[in-house]
Length: 339
Image (cartoon, rainbow, N blue to C red):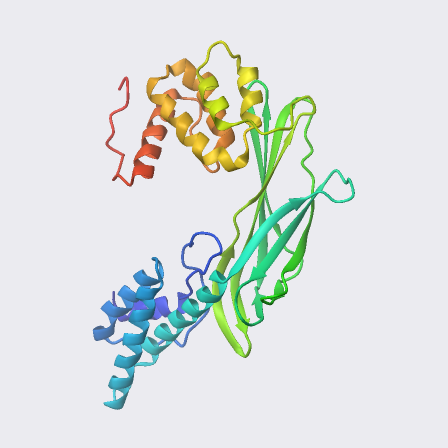
């Protein structure tokens, strides 16, 4: 990487310290850019890679070694170190912020309040850090997804993003959990709907965390989604055990309405395991079974993208999921059944 590219990298440094799994780097703002001597370019590239991986101990080790090297080079009168020092100290700030974020829990919850039809969304913030922390963000965003399914298996999704009205500035101490209301959210199911699901997650952009007089980068903070499932009034409220669902998927004695009624009663905590077990059925299912029974079931328990109605796409998707979960390499060259 040339010196010009490293100047740009210094302008864009700011890696995520996340409550959920780490995200991509985000724009943090200028960090005293300057030319990077060629002898440091490889080491800064390695530090960048270390910041994107776990654990942070490797990145901290690199920061300590680079600080010693910078001190040694400065003592010898080398004067082109400003850009390198800014990069290293910016990385240290990100790591300090991550340490404090890791000591906190950001938990989104849905709650019923005073028999209102809407659900209240509450962020519960708890800290194990020995001192009070203040989380500051220039912008906060709630991402909402409503999912509705009919007894026929037909499914509809509606997504929406809502900006927080006020820039967050939340204080939390080791003995003082904090609860922040995120407003009331309707689910609004129609009479044809068998079940509806509401998912919301919170993202704070360009967040910082203050610890006493020190201010550290917290990158992009993102919570795991809060989830609420609402069933049609005629359905039982109790959760269905996973072992009672999977055999029903290919049981031709159970109609699609009966299958969907079982499916929506599955606890969200079982979605991941259900997805894996139902996906495994694709290998012995016919194209019709995939389209009519397996695909509607997988759409309900799958967050993110999934295929359309073509059984061949579902077969490829299933093999990709299996390879992904097993840690195998690129599945793009797989042969498809019937190809």
